[in-house]
Length: 447
Image 1 (cartoon, rainbow, N blue to C red):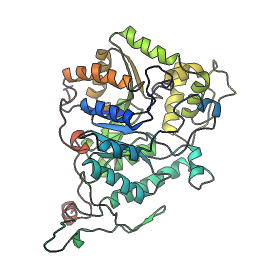
Image 2 (image 1 turned 45 degrees about the vertical axis):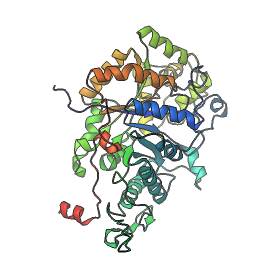
Image 3 (image 1 turned 180 degrees about the vertical axis):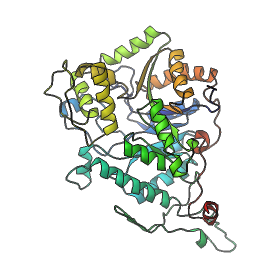
Image 4 (image 1 turned 180 degrees about the horizontal axis):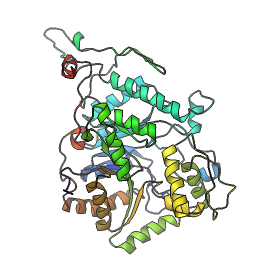
């Protein structure tokens, strides 16, 4: 098979203290609670020419098991709301993309469209929206619901939500605001498009009260890997952040694009990878074991319970098998991934939490820079990924290790850029700038 001509993409998935569930008590882990912590991380990633930094988010504190929650940093309590944080980081960075998570389950499409459009303007064209549905049952109680939204209903709402947001982003054509002081014409009435959307979930008149953005619209990212999630991604997304890292997943999603009039280059698949890097195998393994030794059993059990569908497993012995569990209404693809791992390798509950404590079902690699580059190269060259979202075990040291040790190896192999290709996130991801769907030019081209 001939080598790919493109280069792999890299995102930095920034999670305070680090991605390992026991990162926070590690002596080298920063608290990650100040703006300065994130300025440091963003500048590190930008100096290394990463495509983007990425922030997850949630709509509730996850405190159902209060004892376990009180012993870990990642219980849905975040130091900052991500759009606010990225707006601040846009002022201290120049090229790196800025991607935040925004839920379609408990957000309003007009407000979300405006917030991400503003971020795109503030950053000069570097914003991305990670479109997610909210599977956390506790989130419902924060938004006037007395129960959670069913999985299928979440995706029905997400489909319509995406259509409304994308339509609002095309409220104005690129040159709709001449701001002509001589004629007195501030905007061109003919280049305004009122959405007038009326659907099952939303009625939104429009137009958006923000001009069209430098990228046309922010890059749309999606993270679902269930059947409805893959279909939504194929229709609307321009990048996927997923735990799945198989050739079958890659081929499945890319194979769905044609029916929506899209090409394979219109969507980048960037699985998460949790790299523990050492100058020798022994050093890498020692770093990993230091983190594993910090896992408290209550925290490990809580992690398995959450990822296996949100079921309470406290009645089961840690050194016994994972019990049979019904299909969840929460994250179906993640439940399947975790349960399949436990069954395939005949893991006990304790063994399972030790396996997923770092990557939470994403790809975990412990080794030398060469070994980690080997695995990334194999997956990239064999069309299992277009790049990777780097999930550093601890922050900032884990990210620094990857940048100082693995990135030079990737460049030596011709797999990763030395300079940015452009000034926008689209430029650097190799994505086309979308035409305004309502403009006369776009309508004529579609005929």
